[in-house]
Image (cartoon, rainbow, N blue to C red; front, side):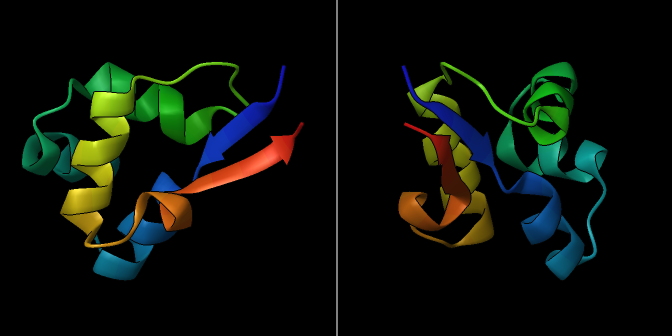
Length: 70
């Protein structure tokens, strides 16, 4: 099974936002945003969360998700 990493910190830094601000702006629970941002690789991610984050950062899902292991 492949692992993915979400580039939340990179996009938040570009906007000058904290993870708390990302949580507030996206409507996602802070603990979820923090866990996704800190994880070096995840086997599964909530697709709805990925959509919300991509929309928030105004990027394509492909730009937000990094495949680190296939």
